[in-house]
Length: 289
Image (cartoon, rainbow, N blue to C red; front, top):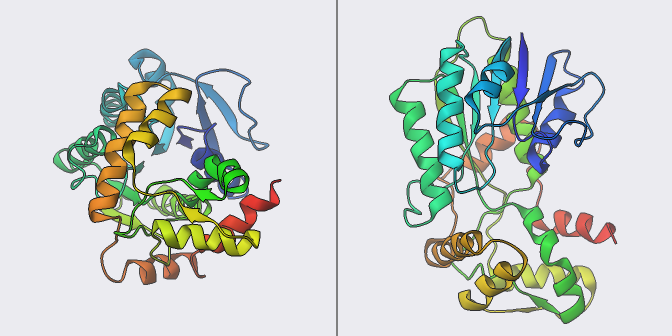
């Protein structure tokens, strides 16, 4: 019986596959396009589409443990709910679902409320699952590196309410540990939810300051304008996603992204090491030049 990783060609999915590749388990990677993803040795490629029950029934056959990650799409909720129903139909009792922090608080943000709907299904059907709720990814800032370096401005309008950003490598480490813990048990483990955050609180000016120190020049915070943020995103992608991200940034500016007290200590105990900090993530991004 295998572990199936959805979103296998994306950042989180590919990192999880790397971490599980040496764990002596049968691994399957769900991809939409055959041959496109570079998979670790020994990982079986499974072609499927979460919008297609027929292909997902085939993909979920002989699967013991499921990692469920949905891309932000207009039918994200439908894909997730169908996949979970099909997993239940297939008798899968070991699930790790990637949600988002404050899914229940960012009620006006489509992809947050969508993930909260999926969480409520997991709870109401008593599915044995770990729900991972990560905060803003540190590596999201790779997209703005050229702006920071070229114009001396940190343009992500995260405001000053504070965001406990997390490194995607820590997300993958925790997800892999949860998958293995569930996969190797004789009986399904109880449902639980983990908030995933980094070890520090970042604001727009603080993030700009970190970049400035690492670049040895002054970097200014670009301010809280959501109009400009939405317009920039819409110039390079669908306008519905640009508006979704605008709404998310509005909530970040209002209430931030903060875990409950003691969460950092719990995560570091799970990892057996400190969580990665933002400065180290910035240094790694700058090494990519």
